Length: 185
Image 1 (cartoon, rainbow, N blue to C red):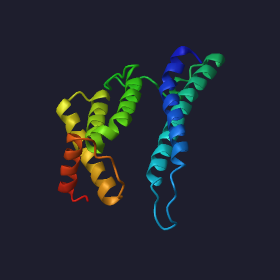
Image 2: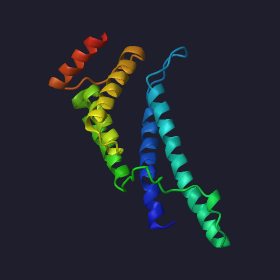
Image 3: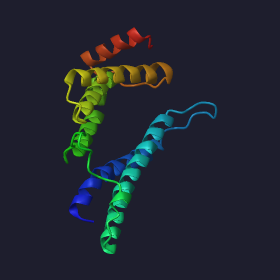
Image 4: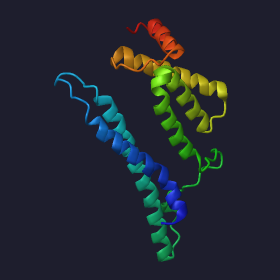
């Protein structure tokens, strides 16, 4: 495996390690009764999906490398059988730092979550993530962030009954205002 291959799987490996650690921590959440979903159900489900995604991407990238290596040893060109790693001509090119910026953005989200509260932290996170994902329209990115944060806030707090941090000071007041507007007690 050369340096370029390692750089391609390194973000997925880092996220995989973090998710495995977080899943181990989520195992410490007390289980609920047999008839109800416990507080650990959603975090564990999301972490398992994230772990599966990382394993899939690492296996895909390593598998492409193995197929190419095998092709080179045989001296044949089976280009039609090998999936292309290059983006299509009309697709935007993603820089090498974008996955690392996504990891840093996620770490900042987790760190600021208790102070900013769920709504504002999620709004900023989703907006920045959409913008970082090469969708360079600020107002559309902000609209997606607003819809996602309000939608998930309603889903988690009103339907699933998960208690989320509301924030400190003016951030808490903003969250309380939104909660009253959505009928969340």
